[in-house]
Length: 127
Image (tube, rainbow, N blue to C red; front, side):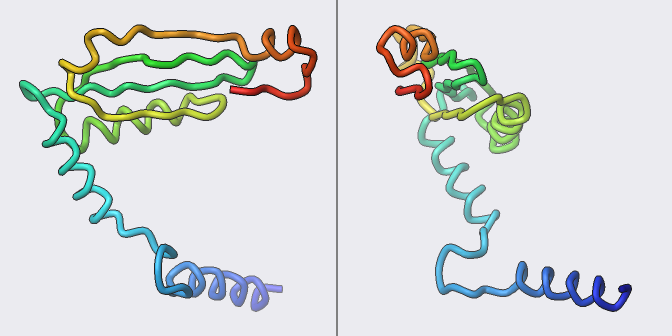
């Protein structure tokens, strides 16, 4: 039993660390952070960047165009993303924008479950 478990773990780690396909299999975290830093420098104003985000919760409530500003650093943006993902009850989305471009955005909310019931398809939620 112990040897079998050891073999399974070895196989698992070997598969995780082997590049089986030529592209896209292994995540290059440094490249992702570098791309994020470039986007942040492009979208930052006065040391801040705006994050426009939204979500659908487990009850079918959808919120969109929520604007939060964070310091224009990779760490701050990643921390914000991780905190949103940690408490998410459904899909979430977010975009980086210049703070001046988000001044006229208004947050919106919809009850997708109620809309589905009213439209005669209470078993499926459409966005």
